[in-house]
Image (cartoon, rainbow, N blue to C red; front, side, top):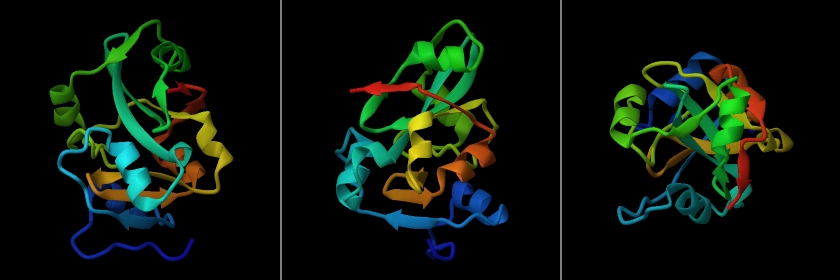
Length: 166
């Protein structure tokens, strides 16, 4: 994969976390369309990467506490599976304003790395089937590519089948 690329002006808390951990990663900037609603699909299309290799970062409330779910943009988050993976009973998507406040990122640019507060994280087990995966670098229009094992290690995530077909 090559040396970490920290393109000038593109440092984010996520890229800083990777650099400090000594992890190899590649940044993939693309032109973000301000009118786009499906940020992950927009990134996949712009970068020519299959939807199952780009992962979106979602935040849910599990039994009253926030948790991060990292799932392929090709599908949807299975909230029951997320709750079960964390030993909880119920999960619901978290309020966007609360998510932005807690993570320090804006919706559409939330990275699983470098959040203001470390939250319990579950990475969909499909990620482990790839040599590298893509996820938000913490800004709309910027993706990180790295080994899924590094993502799991740095977020202290559990892996579980939490994604379902769209």
